[in-house]
Length: 261
Image (cartoon, rainbow, N blue to C red; front, side, top):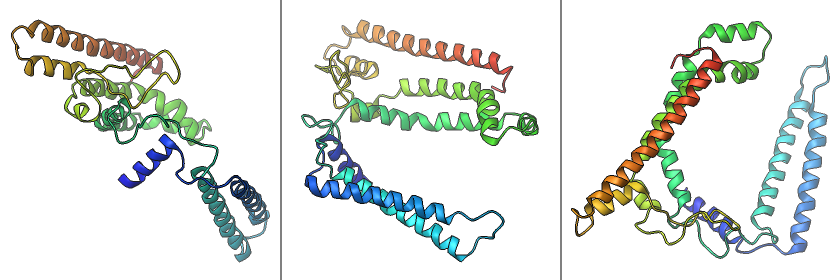
């Protein structure tokens, strides 16, 4: 898994190491198109005729269609991997294998995901079964029932999980120290010129700033006002986000006509 991620990361940063020659790449593209057309034709022939049972010929054509589509997909992925027209998104800098805001965001997402998943599962299971049965009785399909009945009714519970995830993510400092947070960031990940967002840049974190000023400063007594101010700012941000999420949850609950959370 690690080898795959680093290989994919190197391709995204700098493009293919050994791109195919232009003539070979065009020939491969033509082969991919021919395989796709052949798979479509075979799939058309594999469809059983109305009123006739499915026979061995139809099953063989179905397998052949799947194999041809698989070959076309594999050749298309190979063409993308060895494309001579792609030189990488970040040829002048390295995003993969270094600290940055991308890995910090993914780390926080993985840390808070279980809270959101559990809350979402409980919210969906709390939707009364009579709503589902009533929707099916009115002729709605499963997807229409999920989209128009179950998800709107469960959204207040999902928002509860998001509120808990915000509180959990705001207190995480140690993982971010390893993957992106620094004591002093000379450049911000965001800037007003293209490409606007630099995923490879590190950033400063209020929690890490509290730890650094309060426990690593040579004069902790003189730094105490800064620690209290930073702590108050962090609490204020978390409370503001929670209030906004609670307000949105209340609005969704009123729109759904009540909820279990």
